[in-house]
Length: 272
Ligand code: ATP
Ligand code: MG
Image 1 (cartoon, helix red, strand yellow):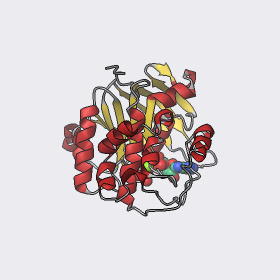
Image 2: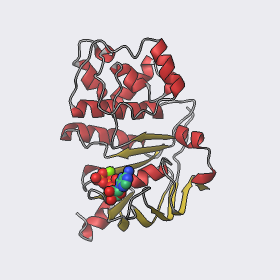
Image 3: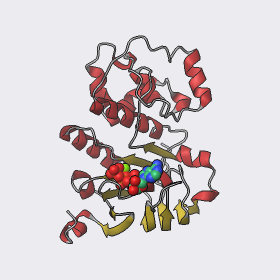
Image 4: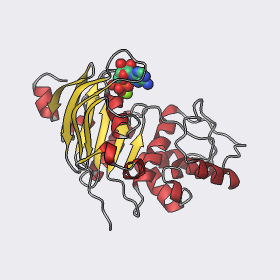
């Protein structure tokens, strides 16, 4: 099997302010995540967690400082190569007015209708339990979401889907927030499954925000087994199951990393 070993990520004194914002969202942030490590960014609302993930995905560039991906300045990488090497679940994930199978398959636009991979991705993201309860299974159509304009699909893929009839949404099925999150998680895993173009970095912004405790536990167990092969960076509001297994926790407050270490180290210093 071709395994792409995880990608390292380093921030050197990174500062960032959103366009038109008055305050900095990140101030002098530095950290280093080794190949195949699991890093969890913990902090309260607005502390800067999502901003770190967006900068790694290069949705934005830092105003100051340097981001190194696999030891190379992110600005010197081809955006396409970076995107191919990375699977992301953003906090504001969405779903498309397509079947559940298509919603997952779109994680890997080159294999969007490869049923074996879709099933494997569904197992990893927990959508398997959702489709098992639906009479039409993976063929169940999803209602369009309020923000389905927020679409990362290449225009070419979109037109291919339209031609294939994939955008005809006649039947619809409203699922719960947690069920939709499982589908979004599965889409991210779909992206990470490509053996031809292996992904070395997984970014998950609050992956269990809508999951029940059992689903959260199952997800973290599955993710733990991917570690070593892929570098993983998650965000979370709290210390718990996920941080216990982290190689590195970055504790954010007010746009800065106030503490870093393992779960045991941060809890000992009163971080919990
Ligand atoms: P949460 O736990 O609520 O997801 P977070 O730690 O992910 O919070 P960020 O989304 O990184 O926080 O936000 C950091 C700061 O940047 C906040 O002060 C926020 O108001 C600001 N911010 C975030 N997104 C934008 C944006 N698109 N435009 C302007 N300011 C933004
Ligand atoms: Mg956030």
